[in-house]
Image (cartoon, rainbow, N blue to C red; front, side, top):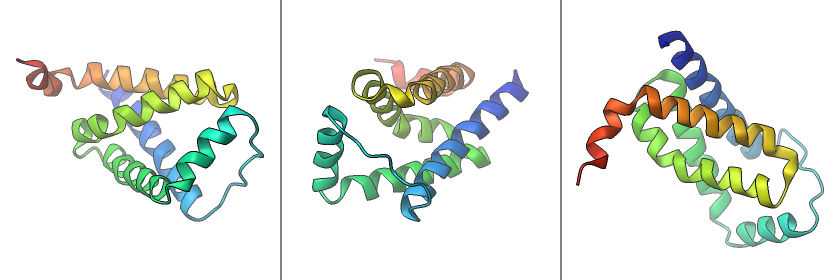
Length: 124
């Protein structure tokens, strides 16, 4: 279980790091969007601050996951990001659904592995 936790944590961290570095340095050509996902993405981009903030948070939390420090904190910060990634790909753009499902499964697995750290958060 310990090795699986390290593997899942590392893969998840690398995914967030790659995503943010690729965005910051424009390493991956963005596909042409159409329909509701285009409107959604353009609306977020129009704010001017959202994508730089999101990618900075993804980078910092991805590094935390990769090195294994502050993992529960990184997971709490990334949880709303993962939920939004999942629902955007479920409802607006199905092309990224396999990665979104992996992220949800990885977060559920890591939440189970770190359940003792999350227990105090759930006390009334």
